[in-house]
Length: 196
Image (cartoon, rainbow, N blue to C red; front, side, top):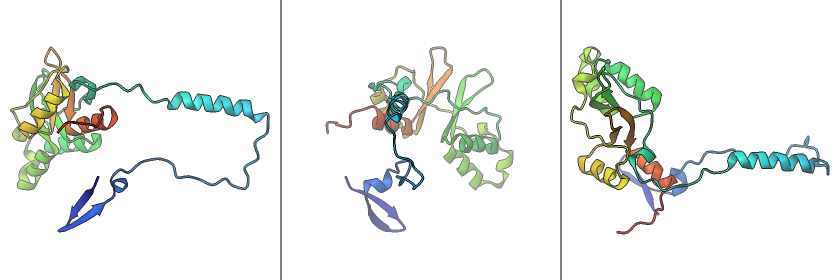
C-alpha cells in the first residue's frame, strides 16, 4: 500500500512503517558482566519463561459486532454549566475529542467536541463567560449497545459525525463510540478482506 503525507504543497511518499510507530524496547547487546548460563539454571529459566508466557498470552480474539464491543466505557461527559475551559481541560487530560453533555438527572442533552471548543475560543474574546450549553450540539445521534457496527459506521459517515453516545435501555450513558474506536476494532478484531 502507498501512503502519502501532504505538507505545505508537497506530496511525500511515505513507507507504511513510518506511519505505524511500533512501540517496544530497542535490542541490546550483552555486557561483559553477564555470566554464562550454568546447567542448574535451566529449571529456573524454564519456570521464568513459563510465567512470562502466561502473562503475555494474547487475549482470545472475537468478532466485534456491536457498539458494546468497541465503545469506550465509562464515557467522560460534561455538564451544560461547565465553562469552556473546564471542558477543554477534560478533553485534553483524557485525550478525547467528544464529550456527551448530561443534565443533572443524567439525561443526554447535547454533545461538544474539541473542535467546537476551539472554534468558540477563537471567535470570541468573551469565551471565558460562555458555557458548554452555549456551544453544544443539541441534536445528538445516539445508539443502543446492540447496534451493529456496520450500521453505526454508515450512520456516522452519512451524518458526518465523529462520535455516537451509547445509551442503555434506561437512557443512561453506557459509553461512546468514536471513529477511532471503530478503526481500532478493525485493526484488532476484524478480517481486513472486504468486498468492493
